[in-house]
Image 1 (cartoon, rainbow, N blue to C red):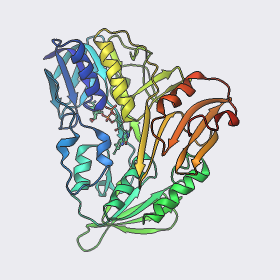
Image 2: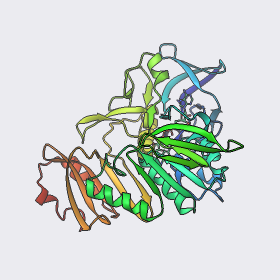
Image 3: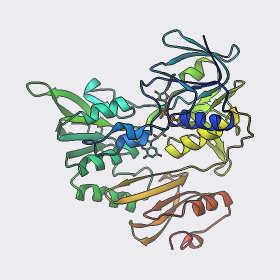
Image 4: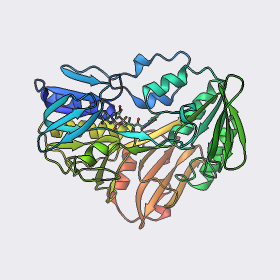
Amino acid sequence: MNEYRYLIVGGGMTGHAAAAAIRGLDPAGSLGMIGEEPVPPYARPALSEGPWAEADQRRFFLPALQGLVHHTGRRAVSLDPAGREVVDDLGERYRYERLLLATGGAPRRLEIGGDRVIHLRTMADYERLRGHGGHCALVVGGGYVGTELAASLAAEGRDVTMAFPEPSLGANRWPGGLSEHVTRDFEAHGVRLLRGHAVARVEAFGDRGDRVLVRTSGGAEVLADLVVAGLGTRPQTALAEAAGLAVSDGVEVDEGLRTSAPDVWAAGDVARVWSPALGERIRLEHAENALAMGREAGRAMAGEPVRWSQLPSWGASFFGAAYQAVGKIDARMETVEAWRRPYHEGVVYYLEHGRVKGVLLWGLAGRLEAARELIRRQRPVGAADLQGALER
Ligand SMILES: Cc1cc2nc3c(=O)[nH]c(=O)nc-3n(C[C@H](O)[C@H](O)[C@H](O)COP(=O)(O)OP(=O)(O)OC[C@H]3O[C@@H](n4cnc5c(N)ncnc54)[C@H](O)[C@@H]3O)c2cc1C
């Protein structure tokens, strides 16, 4: 039987940030982490960034923490909140005083293609991708991971095709003009785009079966050496759900990041929390959120008062373009665009009921705090008020 004052389930960025915060406040309390992956915590966003050829995975790992006991390669399979006990897939038991669920997300999978498709989420997926010398790559999915991955594969000189069901890249998130501009930019950089195509069939091809023939819903055929999918994730809530914790789209937590069970907290991609600035419960799947929520949950577990009110940002870069976003970003919302240089430098504001709920900063650095302030203020604004507010 393992006994810990603090136990963390999930060895990702959230779990690591929580462990670091606990260590800072309670240097002596026993601290354990159960992580399904066979490696200690690492920075997951690095997995979609090339170049793969000379990458040294040691640079991904997060700093080791004094006295943190890692139980790597173990999956927690049951939680008994009343008995304060967790059991892993090898039957080992862990008693805790305070528990954090930081189980993150599992990739949405293509229902076809089996092992021929790499779903990029873990270091093991990354190693598979890196070890693949194939020149022709098909990237499935035009979201966050898909776009960054396609751009870095193309920048490495690979022949890249992207297939995605939307009419253009970012169509669900950005205004039409921007979305079209980015889409044309990808094409200008040699990425072949299959807009409005879903993958319908995946078959082995060639004498050795080492190539893949993909047919799409739109009738296209793509012959590729490798197929990589970035289709988003689902929160890994099974453990919490089976233990009777309140779960919806994620594990529900209060403003102190506590779940519905005593002395059990949740944070990161798996947690759904009230955002005072946005006036709704949200769940983010981004690194800054993982680090901030992990840190706050760790502080709370170590006895500090915590009241979650942060607005974490996220961003991406491809082919020299870069953006940062904060708040609620959804193309179905009312948007106001303010460009200093159209589609190169400017701001898109996302409004609900005449108030700014989200800000997309395109090619502009150093404005995140002002963007957060605008969202927090919740003053009624019109399109004219927003021109010049952040992009000058
Ligand atoms: C390829 C890629 C690129 C990304 N790029 C960016 C980016 O550029 N910017 C950005 O902001 N975000 C990015 N993200 C998202 C970001 O990495 C995540 O938001 C962040 O890693 C979430 O951290 P987490 O610790 O909450 O969850 P996870 O990273 O999912 O970690 C959870 C860990 O818990 C383990 N686990 C799950 N269930 C159990 C269990 N029952 N027992 C034991 N262990 C368990 C999992 O195996 C995993 O190791 C990217 C993600 C991917 C996959």
